[in-house]
Length: 316
Image (cartoon, rainbow, N blue to C red; front, top):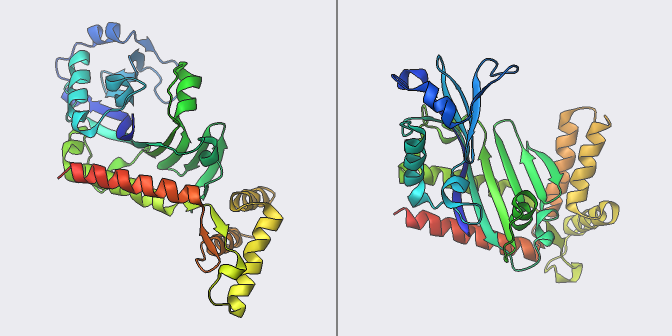
């Protein structure tokens, strides 16, 4: 179950594409009930296998869930070349023509087998992502913005906790979740699921994954001052400051966490001061004259790049 996969999706079929559709049979198929409150009040809600279904005959049908879990199960992944087959299968079972359904959400996930225990990777290595909130959870962490989330977590633990399933390998899961505005993020007008069958558009999605992964600030280690080839007053000053991060906070991750806590306590006069403090940590942590990538970061970077090149090459 290693490599890239399309996971969760949200599809929408508008009522104009549902002429002569038998809603009564559909309600029975998904065991529908009327929604009594909220955004979808007076709509119908049901479930089909791994999918949540919301629908109204005067508006359309929303289908939300994991296409990978639906087609390949929980301990395997849906490969890109099989995406169309999976969508066709789902459409046939629901009695819907899904190829022209609007794509409102798409998750692209990558599973990587780690060389060490997964706990060494999930919380400490990924320290910050500019303009995103960093949120820790039991099995990993998330970076959240309005349209996009990046989730990095222990897939082995998640399968056991949620499904009671056991796998032998330690697997690090990295997910790019485009929660809304897929058309805007990929710069494609009125994005439909069938657009993803185009390898060039799927490659855009892969590049978007790569772009956000590379933007994530990752743990570094402080070089020994004796290992620095040329010493200048600036380098020595930066070494003192970088060492200060370790002495005061313990790690870069803890420095970013403390900055967020100070922000909650109202200790910054404005957002710019908070941003400059985060930049100070980032600049010192990523200064190649005094810092080097953490060895485990180098491992994950290499594996992400290898999987990206492999997936991109398979599209040619």
